[in-house]
Length: 494
Image (cartoon, rainbow, N blue to C red; front, side, top):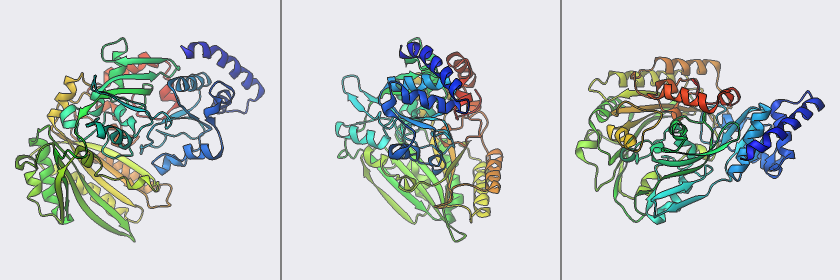
């Protein structure tokens, strides 16, 4: 393997560099090695290419960070050499694929080495095995565009600009009630470990534990440079086999909508149904403009009364429902932050479905109170609800399970997101404190997992997983020196 022959030479050069300049940081030493080594042509520490890579993160908070250098990897070997160099140098690092993370430092690094995967974006469909092979630099919109003419899709993100890193956090798609978390559709991955060693992991080979850990373990277990996932027959744009769209409510319907949410998670277990509901606030001149938006989809000719009837009975200010292709549904939600980067912050909770709607009312009340108290400091906020039915959990188990290991379905993943006004680059101490208080005090159902892709970086997500002990054991096996948790940002708890 490339990393085995590379390590001794790297260590020798590091020693020379240390003698020559004790003022260099570990990351600067790593960059010097990379710029003098076999992948020097794809390493940049200044100039237009560097600037593009350093500022490409979706979240402005991450786009403001300045790496010591960026490796614009093209192959798995490039990533292996970069990671071995980082490992030998004990350098800070981060990895960026799609770049759609709200967590500070999870896809960029101040003064460290950034491994940028944007040039690794190949997508191929194998009809004979009903599988799709993806490189990590692809976005779900690009993947959908390539696959749609062939009548298939993959279980990817609900926003087109989201990248493949979603698979490592579990991942939610409108197909999830049918197939499980997006990560449950993974068949095979190539992984570069922290040492630079490259392995191929599947559910049945010697790296089966690593394979399972990657299905929810975020960026803690290595850098995936190739995914093989299930291809799911969805039809082309012309095949309007789905039905749905948006129901938009006024703020006077908050109580009715919260009641419908609690009942939906309790009662609906139809794998053909998918939903996303969010309470949205826009802020200007100390004024809040609220809206409630329900995205409802069904893989069938209409929205069944027994599934969506309670929501449809609530008066709307706008209803846009029609036959859709899966392609139409997957492209319904745009990404306003993609054009003009803003500082974005996330946080998560989880509530079981219930006839007791009080927890839903309480979490909304706390959200509304925070929004009112800081309406002069915010650009937009959302409180979003995504139902996870039992069909999703059972479909995932049938595919081999994942590290999240939710005990059952019948709950809502809840995301609180906020963006700052355009031009504002950091939050106030008061707002930071209020956000953390919200995450600590907001209602959540014990025993159900948080969703790492929608969480705050300070939330202990892994500890909510049913597979937490498994994750800790597996992490200790593949990173015994705890390099990843010392030298890169990501979920805590390992």
